[in-house]
Image (cartoon, rainbow, N blue to C red; front, side, top):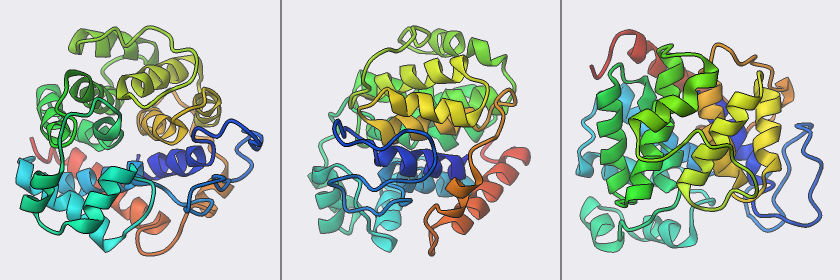
Length: 282
């Protein structure tokens, strides 16, 4: 899951809100965004915050506010990178304590920040605990109806596939029955900054395709917030038994290396799935 989140994130980031001089969306290579500082093949905040959530799950840490905030700070400080919203990144660069975070962050956003990091929560074995944990981590930065609902939907998507809750065609209905929106309505047009848009786009692409490559191309073709939409889509799609795992090998080979690159992501993925099989955090 985490490797595919990073691939979707890194690939989508080259197209994010870039409306002119776009390269062809054919998965032939990672591309550098025309204005972002990140290099081609580097992932953004979507993956880094998913790493933080995954590490909490592997360590069986409680999803208490202070514990989660401390993890967010630690993961950013050990590997500072661009890709966050300007305001939130400035806060992370400026503060070093949980109390400092709380003083600076106003958790009134309805955007996608809480949703983009929620995929790993779906490894929890109980759907109710998935919903609770997704809400707890969302409230820290996105304590709004839409911010929380999108985070819960993303976590439930991976849970649905990991625990074989039903066929791929039923994912939208499952989310709708469990949440506060009609997540099954097909998405059209550009994906903007609100998390519910990313969820609708992800559901649409997963239902319409039967392999990861076509799914990734389709969600990026929507345009707009392509890194987050792709990260959320790949988180869920990679967990589905019905989706052929056919992302081009060069997207794995050219994903960023380094301390927190491909090898780290694979190892954390293995730990997360091992914890799931053991019934961790149950």
